[in-house]
Image (cartoon, rainbow over all chains, first blue to last red; front, side, top):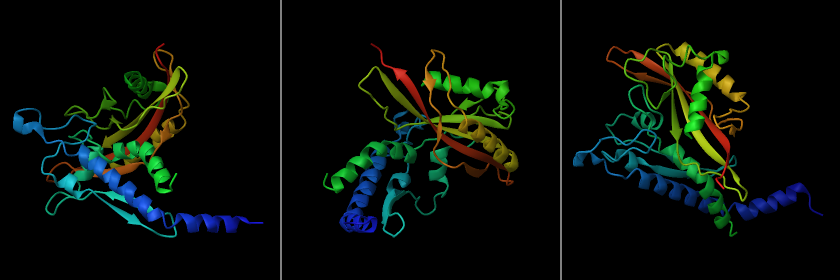
Length: 134
Length: 143
């Protein structure tokens, strides 16, 4: 007979070696997805409107936002996570990514992180299944 | 989507919900309020990326992720107003739309976020309370 601890221990010994690879794949694909959508060049140079439509990902202007996208896998006893984050280059206003995502008094939001999270609801379970060999 | 947003705006403007004084004169506003709008006011934005839930029957669920932003120059007012709107949305069982379609209970995605943004060189700030909800609308596929 097995008790709950035996079963849990067996599952964890089987799962733990696979987990870093799964989280790494999720982080890599999510960042690639966000970068692809942030890479639309700003069309201002062609005499059109400068900013992307409200509610959509911002156009690429300096490239700081897209180049700052990164992910980091953190393994621990508490839930292990893949952290997706962005940063600006030195000298840029560090609030710009937040203001783009949530908007300001004078600027409508141009969210790019939360749509990626929403799209991930389909992608992440599939990647977990693949990572577990299912 | 348009019907849902219209119903939500009507819900905010409904005097029985007690929010008419905090949404702005012609609010709530889509994405951004017109320049010079008096505080406080509310804006809303549709956040994309959510696929609809398709079924094999004639009904499906259209999903919508919305951000509500409440702005004022007084931080305490923003906190109070944000708490009020969240408490109303949290217990909103359903919204009936113009064609009789229903939303399900909205789901709050995140705890409220509070932001201060400087608006001039004198240190004046505008404060914002941000709420995020998902709405599920049960719809009937055209047959």
